[in-house]
Each structure stands twice: as structure tokens, then as C-alpha cells.
Image (cartoon, rainbow, N blue to C red; front, side):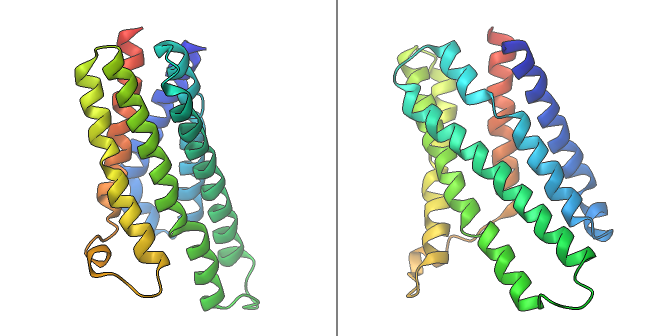
Length: 201
């Protein structure tokens, strides 16, 4: 299971790098659905990771974190797949404008924001429990990295709260969603974890 997880994991990293390198070209070609499909496949390749890490690190501290990590990836695969279906319908099968632009935007917002911010909060909780487990195993460097990723909890929480509250709070308004930051934070998070299991075991 370890080898197949590593193989799938690095395949997912490769897909992520392809997405980053071809992003502008895909946007210019209006291939939004294909982009979201690639992201769904990418997250699907990482699904075994929380369970494998739990088995390798062999710590009861990580049980809760494994649940959050698994739910995080499942929800992202589900969200990206639903967004793909929505975009395909709007671009290919909505010639009669049965769904207006405002309705299309509403559906897309429902599937993306604050949905994705809440899902990323789950990743941060997973990272915190990974940090605790690495600390327990006296792997200080990995623990420090995971705690650093865990700090993004507040970033995603503020974005989710700002999107959800009717009466906006100035502190939350200052925290803007930054796709560049989110994408590279996610990339480095998984690169670090797959590098760990690749070279450690």
C-alpha cells in the first residue's frame, strides 16, 4: 500500500504542476471544466495518504487528524467534480439560457465559496494533529512544518466567516482569499508529506 500511495501521490503532484504551468492557456481556451476535472483527479490520487500516514506513524494522537484529513480530501474531490458538471452544463447545454448568469453564479458560489475555505480548515486541523504526532516521535523539523501549515487555520476561518456573516467585521474583511497563496500552500503541504514517506520509509 505504501508504494502505491507514493506512486499515486507523486502522480498527483505532477498533475498539480501541469495545472500550474498550463493554467493561463486553459483559461484562455475556456477549459474551466477540464481544469476542475484535473483537480478532482489530483485530489483523488491523494486519498490514501491520511490512512497511510496513520499506519506509518502509529500514534493514537493522529486518529482525529486522520478523520479530518480524509474528509478534507473526499470533500474536495466531491466539490471539484460537482463544479466540473456545473461548468460543462453551462458551457455546452445551456443554449436556451434556461439557467441565467445570476443563477449560474449562485450555483458556482455554493460549490466553491465558503465551501472550499471550510474544507481547508479541515486540512489545517489534520496538519496540527500531524504536528503533534511528529513532535511525540521527536521529529522536530516535520512537527514545525506541520504546525506552520496549521496556522493557516485562522486564515481560512476568517475568510469563511467573512463570507458567511451578514454584518461584516473589519478584521475579517482584511483577510482576502488569495488563490496564488492557497495553491502553493497546498502544493508544498503535499510535496513535504510525500517526500517524507518516500525518503523516510
